[in-house]
Length: 96
Image 1 (cartoon, helix red, strand yellow):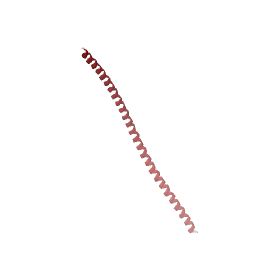
Image 2 (spheres, one colour):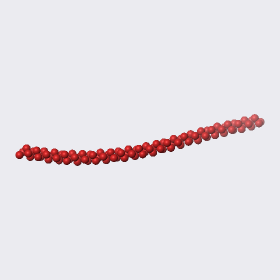
Image 3 (cartoon, one colour):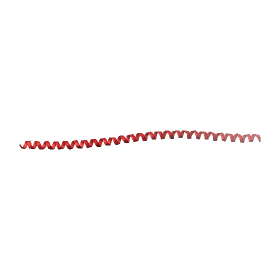
Image 4 (cartoon, helix red, strand yellow):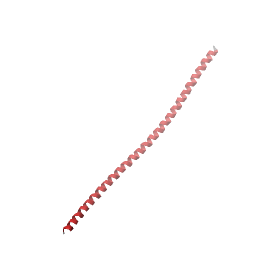
């Protein structure tokens, strides 16, 4: 009877130790997962900042390209006007 009682207590203690070990294991896994989540969130924030910077650079580049196109069109228009004026003068000189 004492043996049976001790055996039951031993089983109970063994099961409790296994359960406690599993709880500790799960707590450790949760801790690791929380840490990985924090790292992932930090990486996401960095990527979002980089994305914002790249978006700002893209917008600046588009504006610069637009300004360049405007100057090119203006310069081309002036050059075409000057060319037409010179062609008229050449014709006038050639006619005389």
